[in-house]
Image (cartoon, rainbow, N blue to C red; front, side, top):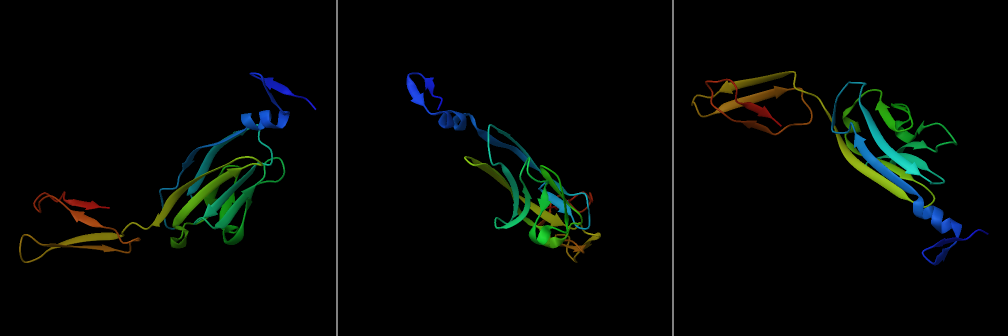
Length: 172
C-alpha cells in the first residue's frame, strides 16, 4: 500500500484521490419555455467531472420520473420510461420530438459518482401563443374588454396606457 504524506498528516491513497474528485454542473439551459407543437425544444446540462469513478448522468421529470440515463464509458445515452418515445438524447442534452402541454414541469439534471452528486432543477412551461387578440371598448371610455383565443396557459393580462395610442397592451 502506498502512503501520501501531506503536511505531516499520513493519508491512505483513496482519501487523497477522493479529495481531488469533483462534479460541477455549470448550467442548465433551454428550459424556460417551449411553444406547443414544436420539435426544436432542447434542454442541456453543461457539467464537468474530474477524478470520479462510477459516473452516471440522469434526467428527472417533476423530481420523481427518471427520463434519461447515461453511464459514460459503459453505454450510450438512453431515454427512459414514459418519455422514451418522445426524446432524442445525447451525452448532455435531451430534445423533445414534439412539445405538448403535459411536458410542462420541473426538469432535473443529476450527475453522480461513487463519492459525489450534483443536481440542478429548472421549470419548463409549454405554451401556445394566442391566434387572435381583440380589444373592445365598453360604453364608457374607462373600460376595455380584452379577448385572446386558443392560448395556453391562461396568462395574466395587464393593460396600461391610454386608448388613443393603441400601444397599451402587455401580456404576461
